[in-house]
View 1 (tube, rainbow, N blue to C red):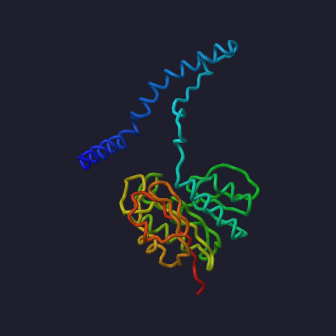
View 2: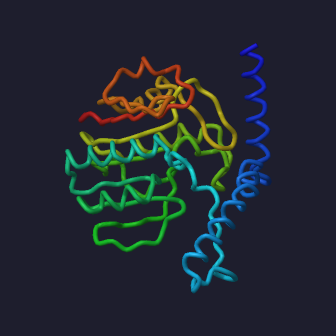
Length: 261
């Protein structure tokens, strides 16, 4: 019976996933019920402050934030950004390069060392130690063996799926990994993360890779350490990757280096 119920839940979730880009029933229900307490709160505010102007262009209903937990918390992004920041803080390179991770993280890193951020869709910001470049992860604007400190978090799993307007390429993730390997300097460090567990393609959102595949894609590099965010959102630092190969949707955090020849 539980197996049957599980299948029904999976089918319902699939239907929601496919339909939500054009019609999100969860957001619709929250909106309909939310306007009840929204109007109640507005009347209550007006009673307490009769001079407040709340109508017309001053109406700005936000109906999804009355929750007991922060529903936008993403354990992958929370832990991986702290993980990179801590590693950069320990090694204190003269220059750190990030490829297409989160813009908030590179802003913080730029406060402790010179930082370059490369993305196909660069953002506009001006900070003293931050350089922002437009670039493609399949053709990075750097010479071979030129970067001593490099990060790329939750990026390569998207390459080749067309989600961001990039060309369809089944080998996109592998090619991106090879490009990161190319630019990493000898004795430098690459801080890399990717959705990890039982392999599959969730088209066109992302791929999930096994640890074995990640190590194969970075066969030119040496694994220094492995950490992980498990399926329950718990962070485990410097563990054996073989203990986490059967995750559903974890986050593998790899530190690689390139040996001197």
